[in-house]
Length: 110
Image (cartoon, rainbow, N blue to C red; front, side, top):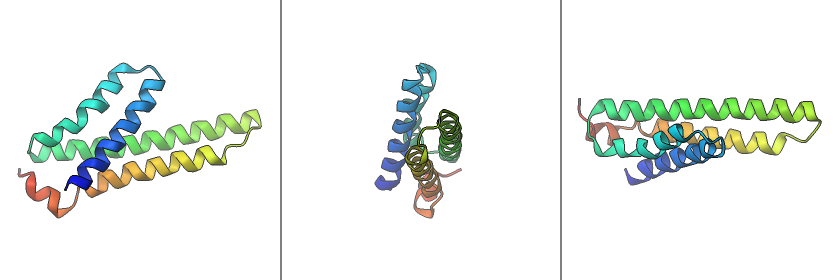
């Protein structure tokens, strides 16, 4: 259970760092507050956390596509950035999928 919460928290902090770089402080605050929903043991909070993880993964894919497109237009290498961002997207997706396990859903009743 702690591993699943830790992975989600790490994914939320990574996304928060991305938004901090873009100076989007509202989203930074959301990323910092989101893991606190683990303390509210209701099923809707678990579903909200999963949705946040899936949306975060989609955000990373969109950022990767933007980076690849920009770097290709400038004639610069883009593969390393794409691999890194795809890895972060997969990590975030995994963090969301692990919240769907039986061990987690048992602790979050309807």
